[in-house]
Length: 505
Ligand code: HEM
Image (cartoon, rainbow, N blue to C red; front, side):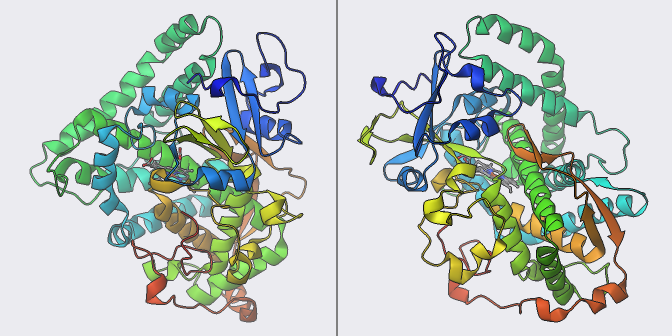
C-alpha cells in the first residue's frame, strides 16, 4: 500500500502543503473528476500525495499500453480495492492474483459466460426490460434514466446470478437488501479513503459499529439463499449460484466454500449492475443530444425489428445492432463506467519514462483520460462520434488504447453479458419510444465506485407502428454476418462492427 516508488517523484499539481500533501484540491464527492482536472498539463504520469499515501496515475495511452503487457505487469489492488475486500473478500474482483480462490472461481465461472449460458440469460433480460417498459407505460411525465437503468440492471443480474427477484418494478421502496448492500459498500470505501489519515483506526471502528447491522443483514440474506439452494432436492446449475454450488473444478475436483460463494455473489451484484446501468445511461444521454445519431440508431432497430413496437429481438438479432454497439462503445470511451484499474510489475522493471517500478509499487490508469489521448483519438477526442469505431476508422489504431473492460487475465468476465444486456435494452427502448432530453440539462456525473449521469431525465413518447414503419430505412446500415473465423472463443461478436478484431484485450 505504501507505494513509495523508491523515493522517485513525479509531476504533481501546484499547491502541495506540508502533512496533507495534495489532499486539499480533491473533491470528496467527485475524486475522479477532480483528479482529471488536476492532471492537466502534468504529462502521461503524475502523482498525488494524500497525507502518507502516494498515488501514481497514468493518463497517456502509450504508457498505459506498456502497463498492459501481461508478461511484465499484472493487476494491482489500489487502496479502494483493498478496502472493498472487507465486503467482497476474495471475490473475483478483489482477490489478489496469487490467491487460489481467484483461479478456482475464474475457472468455475467461465462456463457461466459462454454463448450457451448467455442464450439462457437472454429471455431473463428481455423479461426484466419488459417489466420496466410496463411501469413506464403506466406513468406520465419524464423518467429518471440512471435510477431506472439501475433497477433494471440490478434485477437482471440478481435473476441471472441467483434466480432472485428483488421486485424492483413493483415495490414503492427498493428491497431492503439494496440499501443495506450500498451502505455496507460505502462503509468499506470510507474506511479505505481514511486509511492514510491520522486517527484512521478510531474512525474505522466508529464506521464498523454504525455499519454492523447492514453487513449482518446482507450476510444473513445471502447465506440463507446459499443454504436453501444447497439443501434443495434437485440441484439446479442454470445460474451462477448453481454453478458455484454444484460444479467441481474439471481437473482438480475442488469447489468454492460457502464464504467465498457469498463473496462472489456480492461481487457479481456490485460489479454487474452499476457499470452496465451507467453505460446505458451515458449512451442514452448522447443519443438524446444528437438527433442525427438518434435517427440512425432508430433506423437500425426498425430495420432489424420491423414495425411492431412490441417485437423482442432474438438472441442472434442482438449482434446485428452494429450502430447501437458503436454508440455504446463511444459512450464507454468518453465515460468508462469503471473508470480506472491498477497495475504492478511482476518483477522490478524500468518504464519507458525511465522510472524504476518494483512489484510493491502500483500505478492507476485513469481510463477517461487515456481514452482521450489526442495521440490516439485526435484533437477532437472530447467529441462524441460513434463512427470512430467503424472498421475503417478502428483499423490501425494502436493496440491497448481502448480498455473500458480492463486488461489481461483480470479483465471483465462479464463483458459479453454487459454488452448483450445493454444493446438489447437500447434496441427495445428506441424501437418503442421516441426519447427527448431537457436541452438545458448539463451532464453531471455521480461517482461511487462507478460513474453515472445524475439528474438526467428523458421524456418518452410511445412510437406507433406507423411511425416506426415510416422511418427511412435507407439510413440503416445493412446487417452483415461475421465470417466464422472472426467469432471469439465464447462465440460472440466482440466489436462494434460485429467482427472481433481481438484488440480490446
Ligand atoms: C459496462 C459494464 C461493465 C464495465 C465497464 C466493466 C468494467 C470492468 C473492468 C474495468 C474490470 C477490471 C477491473 C480491474 O482491473 O481492477 C472488470 C472486472 C470484472 N467485472 Fe466488469 N464491467 C462491466 C460489467 C460487468 C458485469 C455485467 C459483470 C458480471 C455479470 C462484471 C463482473 C466483473 C468481474 C467479476 C470482474 C473481476 C474479474 C477478475 O478479476 O477476474 N462486470 N470489469
